[in-house]
Image 1 (tube, rainbow, N blue to C red):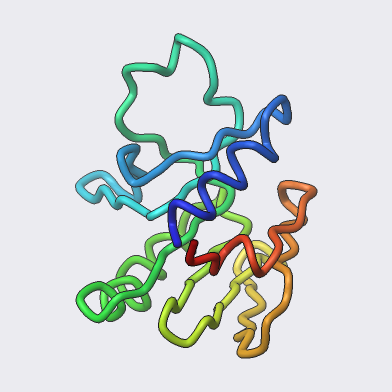
Image 2: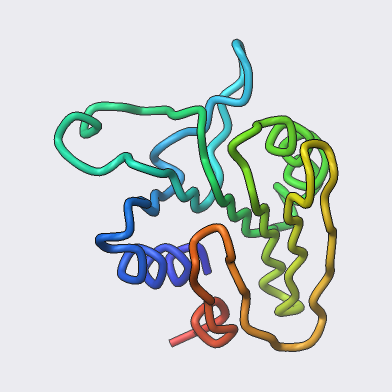
Length: 141
């Protein structure tokens, strides 16, 4: 599912000033903490000047694909660290087995909306000015 999201966003964001990255590029969440979200969207990180970078501190949108071995950390420790980053606008948790999403979007400096989507619905990402179709997230072919 992370590949589905990454592929769609990388294509959709081409020329927008945002770059979609896989978990190979880390997100620094503190002096001693580095996380590897499944997909992260960063502003202004394209071009040769950034080719050798391994971590950035300013993601705009983060995706975590939940699994039995990672869900607990993703939904607790990582969530709090991501919410503390001032650049983060949206955090999306994707539950593959149930085809559900939990979407947190910043509504103020310390305020967030937190909505679970149990029914199929496209994912609006206002910070990126685009929508990610539900079938693109959960495609299995």
